[in-house]
Each structure stands twice: as C-alpha cells, then as structure tokens.
Amino acid sequence: MRNLNEDETSPRGRAVYDAYTQMWDYPASKSGRNSLNADEFAAVADAEIISQGDAGFSRVLRPTIRAVVDLLDSDGEGRVSPEEFKRWLDAVGVTADSDAVFGDIDTHGNGYLSVDELMAAVRGYHLGRSDVPLLGR
Image (spheres, rainbow, N blue to C red):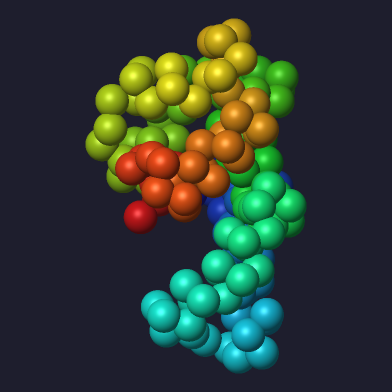
C-alpha cells in the first residue's frame, strides 16, 4: 500500500490487505495449522489450489486480483490500463518490461486487463508458464 500511496485503512487499501491475508490463511486453514514451512505450503497449495484447476485458483486468488484491480482502476471501469499495470509492477518490485508483459496478458487485445486475464496470468506463473510474479515476490 505504501508503494502505491494508498492508506491501508481506506476501503480499497483494506480490501487488498484483507484479500492478501485470506489468500495466505487459506492453505494454513486447510492444513489445520497456524503456520507452514515451505514444503508444507507447497503440498497444501498443490492439493487445494493447483490440482483443482481454474476453480481452485479462482476460489483462493480471485478476491486478491479483484481487490488489486479495484485499487489500481482510476476510472472505475473495472479494468487495468497499461499505466495502472506499470504502477502495480513497480509497487510490488517486478522489474520486467511492463509493456511486453501487458501485451502478453491482454489476450482480448483491447488495451486493458480484466480480472479474468490477470487470473490467467497469475495461474500461468504458478504453473511455471511465466516468470512474472504479478502478486509480488
């Protein structure tokens, strides 16, 4: 939130914070433990998210992607422009060529990114199809 000059107590800032927290709490809750080491996290993520395909990713990651889109979306149209996308990559410390990454993700070719396009890109990263960690490192 700090890198985007957004107060984490604002409605949009709080939504992103809450979504990220829930995204990380989900694997712990499925394991029945309060914390997980890297191997335990990977096992739960594989069983509860990755192996369940689009449904697993959507259940766990869509609220975070939706909250990020709402935070970045300066015109309220529910989509992310190239400038908004670059702002996000800069905020999470991704140094990739934002125009090239944007072009790869914009499968509709309309010059904007939807929640669905961003979901597909995040899923692609987690399946090893992309090396751009859109949700940060």
